[in-house]
Amino acid sequence: MPYHASLTANLPSLSLASLFQAAAGRAWARTRPTRAYHRTCVRSEGVTSSILHTVRGGHDDSTGLGGPSSSSSSVPYAVPPSSQGSHLCATPPSPPPSTSPPPSSEAKDASYAVGVNTAQGHSASAFPRLPRQDLVTYIDVERLLPQDFETSGSHDTGPPSYESDPPWEELRDSVPGPLLPRILLLRSPVPKQLSMIPDPSTSEDLLKNLTLAMTARPPATLSQLLSYHETHLHLHSTASFNLLIKLAIRNASFGTVKDLFSRMALEGIPVNVETRTLRARWLIRTGRWDKAWEREMAYKDKDGLPVPLPVWMEFFGDVKRGAIQVYTAKPGLSEDVTVKSLPPSDPSVVAERVNLLLKQPPFMSPADLDRVPPHAVYVIVRALIALDQRSAAAQLTSDYFKALPQELNEEWRRSCLSIIHLHLNPGRRCNLSQHFAMSKTLFGFLGMHPSFQPTSTTLLFLLASLRWTRKCGKRADAVVRSFVKRWGPDIVDDAVRRRLASFWLKQQKVDRARAVLETQDAIEEERIGWQAEKEAVVGDSSKDRARRLRWLDLHRSPRKSKARWNWRLLRTRLQKAQVRRS
Image (cartoon, rainbow, N blue to C red; front, side):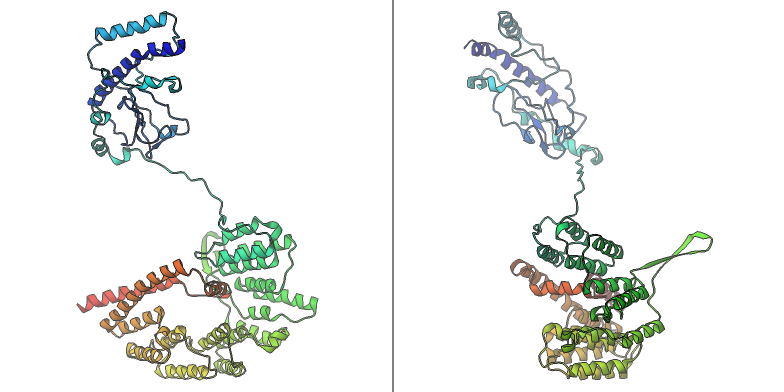
């Protein structure tokens, strides 16, 4: 009870202090500061602009959001900012000397009363006298009574703080932009990992998670998959290493392939036929065909079995174009270095390799004997066409198609169409007679099986033979119309439309080319909406994921960026043609 009485006796001094602070704040607010503060500041009610924290980002650690305090008391109190947000707050400038009149006799009596009360035995440390330059009275709010926050009508703190605030917007606009406070975000490096994939419990789960991440949209990067695989050392298996090696080879990251093979040997992971296939693919695409063959001959001498069929088919491949850079320096001139891509093998060398492979047939399992893999026929036909032995390639293709069963699944039919497409690539300039001969070959192969139907890729290869003919646009349009009439409009895709528009421009038919481009623009707009609806409703289907897995085994594949660049070149050609015409 005596403690509360002492607090009540000191209340007049608190109201007087608030009067002084309000008067000093209004006096300082009437002056135009030379520095512009951010309009988001932290201040206490009744103190106006006496304490300003320049918040670099709109927040302050002391109150959470910039703006006036939520307290309605006339007793000024403030909480000093925490040390965590000290780097976000600028030290407020000291206020200018007050120009208000000296305190009246009532104020002097009030200050004398404070000294009398202190001398009468009350605690002098409850409300210590503040320095003259400090405009904030720090009070332990927990020790005040509810009536201590009541404001009497005689103590007027002046107009509201928002009426006496300086024009912050004008001040901010008057200061150059580089001088205004800015926020700088410093992000700590985050390790590359796949946080959305659950932790596996078995080797099968690890392989499944890697496959899902690889075929997702957008797919995970190689570095992310390697980090995820590295965090589960006890679940490594031959299949998981094979999947990562296959992806690294497809991305031409041959150094990563070498590290994966070394890690596989270090952990004692056994190899299988797929591992041997990937090792041969890696060595052949990096220009070490002879080393790969020597390794397989060592396996043959050790096991007494011929080369397995999947490994044997890899030896029909060659160097990956543009993937290997060769640095050569002139003798005595170390600074003069030339960089060239590793060239493909000479045709005579390729012919010797094909003869060597044909003399040593591969080891075929009973399943391979019952059904010859179409990929094996594909690689042999591709090698024969590369050696310009087209008659032998056509005979091999015809014999294989005649031995096909009556029913083919989708994958088998697609592989057979890939074999047919090899015969539609002339590799040189064609005249009109060669175009008709190619058409005859195409329809002859399509008639060998009832399930064979051409695709847009088939039509694209056939149109390529009209590039060097007269009236190529008119002839290409006739071919496209005949295919659409027989197999429907789905046989025309973006690449076919782009080639048709290019032929029309070459024939100087600007109106026809512009009509094709307008059709393409309308289709793209419709496709964007359809794709968004598909992703929202259907999501990724099993066919989409299977197609992305097939991408790993392709030597080369079309790129969307290259297709967009070709469309851009075509539009530029059309604009120039329109300018010349006008």
